[in-house]
Structures are given as structure tokens and as C-alpha cells.
Amino acid sequence: MTVIRGVDVDEQGRCAHWRTGRDVVANRCETCGRFWACHECHRALADHPFGRADPAAPATVLCGACGHLSSYEDYSAAPVCAGCGHPFNPRCALHRGLYVT
Image (cartoon, rainbow, N blue to C red; front, side, top):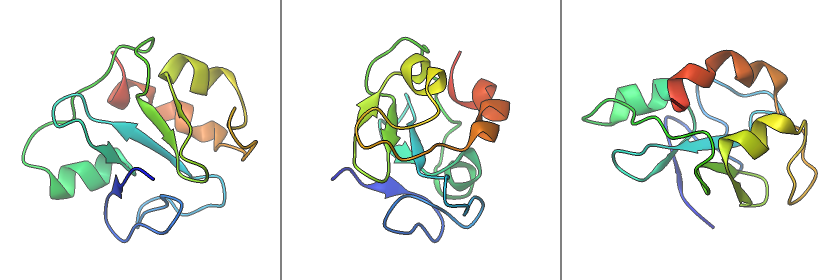
């Protein structure tokens, strides 16, 4: 399974900043190519700004529950993971501009 980086990350990608049962999504930084639990974790641990992705680019969002990869467009259009059906936190949409262009 792909490593999800962050502060105090659990086995499904929840971090010190976001820990609800639905917080299992990691976003790939276009600058370093790594998956991060959240923008705050990236800010705390990386030495560069978060590189935002094109929303249609494939494999930019990772489900921490099953490892399914998707584009941000596909992820944001569904309330659950296409790979395993795990529900996503709908409030993550509030942070869209931090992860995609």
C-alpha cells in the first residue's frame, strides 16, 4: 500500500488534524509526488509548498482504507470510495483549492 505522510497518521491515513471516521483521503503533492494526509501535515513536514494537481489528472487522490487511486474529479463526485465503498468526509470539499488548480 502507498505510504500516506503526515503528523500522527493512523493505518487509514487520518492525521493529527483530521481524525473522523470519514477522513481517509490523501492527496498527492505534484511537487514531491508523495501522498499527504492533509495540507497542514504537508506544511509542517515538507520543505516546499503543496503542488496542486489538475482535477482531471489520474491517481492524485488515495483512499486510505483500501488504496484505491482516483482523480480529484472522480473522488469529489462520489460520497464513497469507488474501490471499497468507504464513506468520505463531505466537508473536504471546503479545501479543494488547496489540492487542485
